[in-house]
Image 1 (cartoon, rainbow, N blue to C red):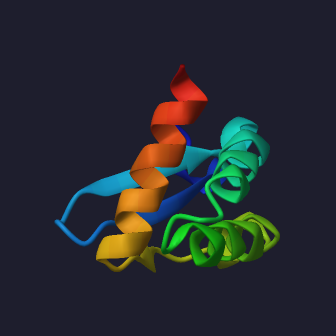
Image 2: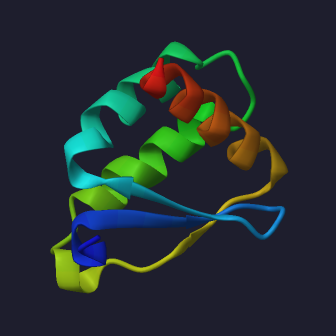
Length: 80
C-alpha cells in the first residue's frame, strides 16, 4: 500500500486504521450519515482536513474512544 495516499488514524484501543484516498468521500459521507453518533462529526472534519493536505504534509490522527467507535461504524457501513 502506498501510505502517502492514505489518512492514518490511531484509534483509542491502539489499533491503526488507514483510509485510502479512493475511500475518503465514501467514509466522510458515512460519518455524516452517523451525525447523531458522538464523535462522528468531529471525525468527518478531521478526515476532510487531513485529506485536503498535501500528501507529504499529512500526519497520524489520534482519535478518542467516541471518535474511534464512529470511524469503525462508518468503515463497516462503507464496506457493506
